[in-house]
Image (cartoon, rainbow, N blue to C red):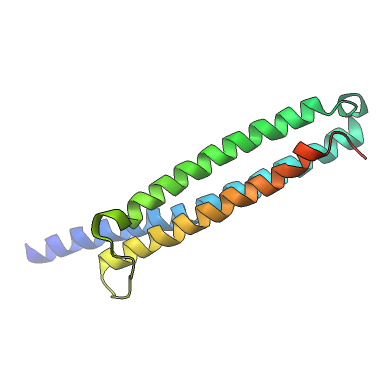
Length: 136
C-alpha cells in the first residue's frame, strides 16, 4: 500500500516537472516564431509584392497583430510561471534544497524570467515596423 502511494506521488511529481519544462521552453519559442514570421513576411512583401509594400500599412498591421498575439501568449506563460514560483505565498526565493517543492518553484522562477526576457525580445523585434514605413 505504501509503495503504491509512493509511486503515485512520484508520477505526480514527474508530471509537474515535465509541464514545468514545457513552460520554460514556451516563452523563447514564441519569441523565435514571432521573429521568423515577422522577418519572413517582411522579406516576402518587400521582394515579391511591391504593390502592397508601397504604403507599408498592411505589413505593419500584420506585424502588429502578430506582436499582440505573441505578447499575449508570453504574458500568459509568465503568469503561469509566476503562480508556479509561488513567491508571494511563502516569500521563499531561495531554492537550494533537493526537495520536490524547491525544484518545482525553481522551474517556475526560471520560466518567469525567460518569459520576461521573451516579452522584451518580441517588443524589440517589432520596433522596426514602428519606425520604418516602407521597404528600402
